[in-house]
Every structure is written in C-alpha cells, then in structure tokens.
Image 1: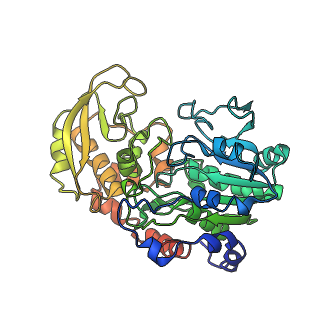
Image 2: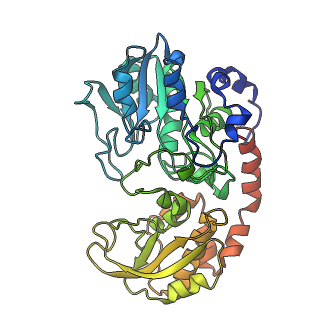
Image 3: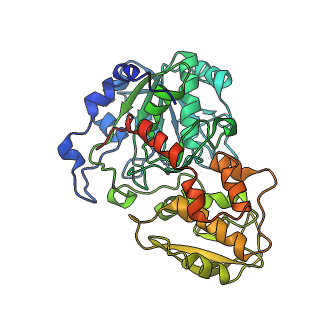
Length: 414
C-alpha cells in the first residue's frame, strides 16, 4: 500500500470539516439520542452541500431516517434538493432481490424517479450509467456491516471509480459500523484474489465506517481519485455497538436480519466456502452452522477451546432454502455473551478447524470460494495441513499490522 496521497484529503474534506463532530459530541453516553447520521446532518443544513446540483443517490432499504422513512422519499418531497435519479446495488434499491440478484432498470412507483442498476457493473460501463442519468453529484448512503466481503463497500468503491471516470462529484453520508470501529481483524486480501467480495487489500473485519473507507479508497487505491466529500455522524464513538445508536435496524440484505448477525458475520460467513450450511434459510443465519452427520461433538470441541466472549450450543435445524433445504442437520449455534471480548474472525477460523476435526464429511466448495472470502489460499491450505486456529491467525499478523497502520490515517472519529 502507498501513503503518498495524503494531500488529496485536504481538498476532499470541505463538507467533512464543516460537519465534523466536536470532541464533546463524540463523548456522548451510550444510547444517546444525540447521535445523528450523515443524512440527518445534511438535511439539517437544508442540503446545502447539494445546492444547485442534480443529485443521484446510491442506496437501499437501509437508507432511512430514524422514523423509518426512506431518504429517497424524504428528499424527493423536499424542494431544497434536486433528486433526479436512484442507483440500486445488490438486492436492489427497494430490496426485492435475494443474494446475487438486483432489480434492474425501472421507474420507482412511489416517486417516479428512474432507478438504475449498479450490481456487477464497474469501470466505464458504470460510468456510462452515471453519464446517462444526467446527475452532477452521486450520493452514497447504505448501512454496512463491517466485513470486507459484504458487497456494499465494493459498490461504494466501484461507484467512486465510475464517478471519477464520468467527472461526477461524490458525497458519502456516514452511518455507524454496527460492530464498532475499535480495530481491524483478520487476514488482508491479496490482490490476485480480487473479486466483488474484495476489490482491494483490506482486512476481513475492517473496523471502519463507510466514510472512512471512502477516504481510504480515494487515498490508496483509486488510480484517478474522485472529488470526494463526506458528511460525518455526530455522537458516535468507535467503541459503540449498533444498539448504542438509537437508530432502527433495517436488514441491509435478506440474510442480515439483526445486529447480532452482523456481530458474527465476518467470521462465520467463511462457511459459505464449505459444504456446511451457514444458516441461510433459518431465522438465525450465520449464527447457526451445520450439516447432515454432525452431532454434539462439534459444540464440545469448540467450547473446549475457551474462545473469549462466545459459547456454542449443540443445535439441529432444517433450512427453508439454500444448503440442505428441508432436511434436518446438526451443528452449533453461537451465543455471544461478551461482545467486547469476542473476536469473530478467530472464532470463524476455530469453527472451521474443529468442524474438519470432528466431521469426516467436511469439504471446501469446489470453486475455492473460501480463498476469495479470506483473500488468499493460506487459510484453506493451513487448515488442510492440520494447523490449529491460533497458528492460522498468527500467519496474518504482519499484513494485518501493516493494514492497521494505513487504516489509522483515514479514521475520522476518536
């Protein structure tokens, strides 16, 4: 990673500086109603940062006010802002599509606004979408969950790149990282494994907000930086979990129903790369894991590790869709009892190691999806060679330390 473009940030921080939270605001107590999202702070100024601009917004069902009105509906009804287009990511703007799907191009029935599809578009084709829309400024407001392989942050990256190509300004409205912004965890993606679940060398649990990630992308990865402004939150602390925000939780995707899901996701999503169920098709996706033929030995083996902040319950479930649809499987349910001590990535690795030890049917997906999720072949090959969880975790120590050093330059909150 390079650190030579810090000066760019000074020219892209006008809105950030104007709306940056004061130190006293950052010290707000837990569950303080003082927390205000980037959108709330923008709206409070009468959308001053968007004055005279034709505005398009990249958003999804999470782009809501605290009284759960969608911000597109709010902005469309407000004469102080000229909203002319909406851009939908994976699952769509209104959220009608399942994983790996989108809503396509249509006119929104509620507002009449044209909705353009960004899913799986990048580079010049996505720049052409922005050009065709006729907007001057592209705004981004989507709730992230804190994991590198959650695709919305790469929608952010692709849209920033495309906006630069199309000569558009880019504005990010910040929202909380629901699993805190205390620290980055896990392996860092190797560039040769870049896909839509990881475009650039970022840690598996990045510990950043979307505005911070936007600054990182602009300063480190984009060949042509975009004209970037960020509208920050006030009242958010890096140690805050989502329930401290006082904001409603809207599932960012169909299988992210609660903040509890987000808490474990950066570790247990690794089971997408195996032949075990990751809990899709249940009411507790990514908290329930299992397969046919697994019994209580897995929970016992996982509990024997004494992992901090979490316990494992022997569990049986029948997914309504996805792997093992309609069939009863055995496995574990994660019960996090100390969020501050819990390390989701180390836990996910430990569960992979113990699942392989206790179940003879364990296998990786044939497309090596685990390598795309972890960002290299290392996790798969080390576990196959019999490495324990602590040995696997130790293997990425140096690259994680390097990412943490770069990350620190782009953090916006104390």
